Length: 269
Image (cartoon, rainbow, N blue to C red; front, side, top):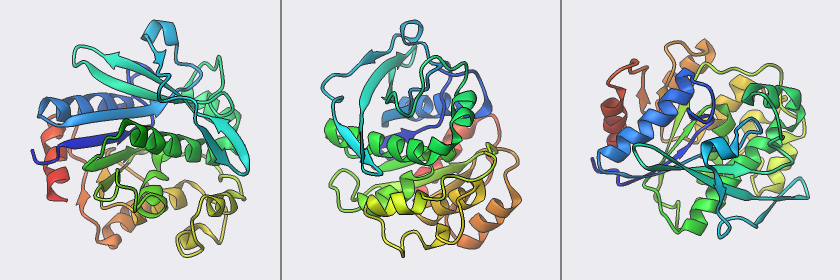
């Protein structure tokens, strides 16, 4: 395949979290693309339920230590890494005690216990990934973001980091799953994003009301180069929005033999 460096910004990956359709594909897809000759980097949040000793995570000191400012507050960025066997694929974890709580029993519990933090949590996660990739001096040809926790990646890459040498030529793909969250994100989310450097024009699609699941996904689609339906059924309003956008679109490719279909879609961009 022609895509030689692929960055995966994932919401969840098995075996670090329990097996779900999302966590399974987020493990198998990067491995499959790596086996087809691409260089791969994979990221996920370090949720509090992930056991470091059991999963052999260790901190990458040379990448940690940066502070990310969100809403005028400093938040230390901690990078941890583990190796998925037998593929020997490294998985990087974005960690911070303010956003990823300790001792939670599940990723979902963590997100639902403190939903008021979810806007900042996803801002921190995406920025943490991007800043880490820059430190690695690794320039991805394609960035694939999966799930709503990664939904701000397209707008960050196409606006805030559009002139950065690491991402200037990257294509961005977003996968939509059927992983809805209830309610809305913090009403101040747009205000916080403007502090990141986004303009009124950048954020016009989410400026009139608090951001819910549909609005967040539409924002991701707006700034992506291609969109994938990663679940058999997704929200009908989002599906219509994808089709009306005219963006390159891969409908649900099935549960088996999907890796070649993803690779073909990447190359088509």
